[in-house]
Length: 130
Image (cartoon, rainbow, N blue to C red; front, top):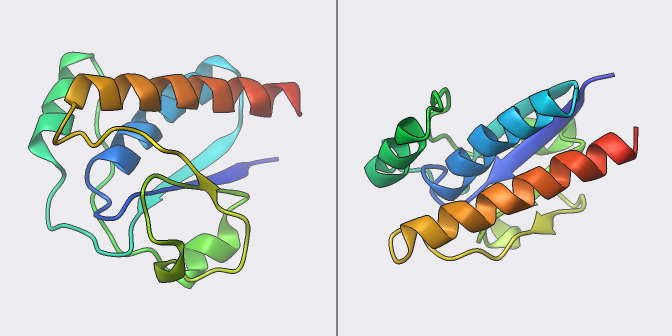
């Protein structure tokens, strides 16, 4: 059975993009069947260039673009991860898991490391709960 995971950050252009990218890899290695989406309550026009450059340098391919989170996103999600969003701006009354990580604009490597570690832990948790 496919698990739908929604990663959100305010602008859907940096933290959630990194989370989706790292989680896709971790989920694949853990043998999870997942569908991953990225969105945010106030999306930017473009992905954050420094995050894209860093992920590309690590060998990842980026396949998400910033977009507005919708009620369809949240009702279809089995797991909703917010990374710095105002939860009142997300159209749901479902459970949102909040991750507190450094801002990429202030600490790119610290932000990416924290997101990576949380994604690895999430994939292991999901694999253990199959």
